[in-house]
Amino acid sequence: MSDANDVQALLSDAALTSFRLNGQLLAVAEELARPVGLTAAWWQVLGAALGEPQSVSEIARAMGLTRQSVQRIADLLVERGLAAYAENPAHRRAKLVTPTSAGRAAVAAISPEHRVRAEALAAQLGPHRLAEVLAGMHELSAALDRLEESGTTSRRRASSTTAS
Image 1 (cartoon, rainbow, N blue to C red):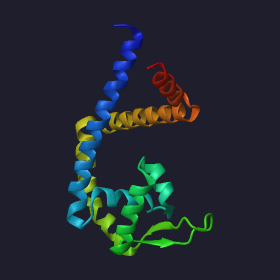
Image 2: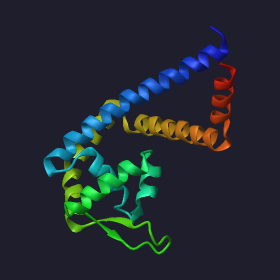
Image 3: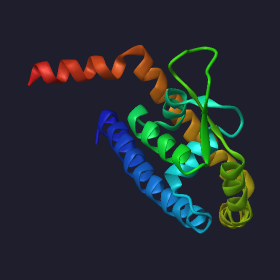
Image 4: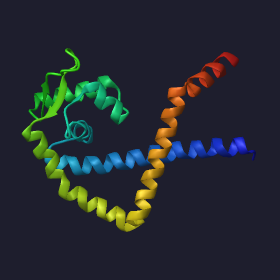
């Protein structure tokens, strides 16, 4: 196998592993969120706005989701009293999503079981190894962002479709 095939296989394996990991993490998130009346997606959107109110677009970018899907979830959260829309001084039309006290309480209620799961995972891998794995995930994500920003992936895509 050539070096090019090796790196292609590595990227494929990284993608497949991340898809599986995403499914596993979403399943855990659903288990943790369900008892407090949330879904994993609702928890994700509320969690993104916990530190400071965020626009729907900012949440979507941070979470790697579409703006439309975050908008639907934010509307549901507002409808159920778990979040509210606030004025955005930076943009007149893009309201900020802010958790209500009920939304903050729901997320806080997840915390004890979340801690138990985190400690169990750290016991499996060791906290230092878990930190190393996470650092590698951040590094891979940043590298993909840089490729996207440089246009490398879209240029290659364009040339491969014109070559067909």
